[in-house]
Image (cartoon, rainbow, N blue to C red):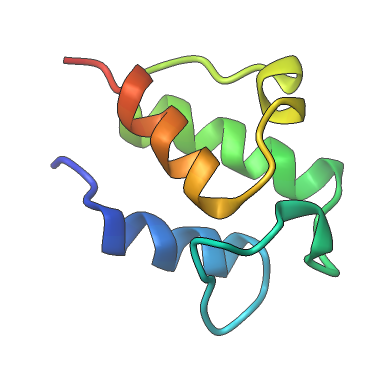
Length: 77
């Protein structure tokens, strides 16, 4: 099943241990942003979007919107 933006935002909120995330939110501002949350996001890319997200890729992304755009761009067809 293809994950849509709402599902992605819900899953990201779950990973970051918050009720909800806003597109404009800076990823590094989340209290739970750490290597474990990044690893969970890498796993999400692989399991639900079919691509490999690397730690250097994550370093280039600033906001939740940046992360979603990267996932959309790299989603397996």
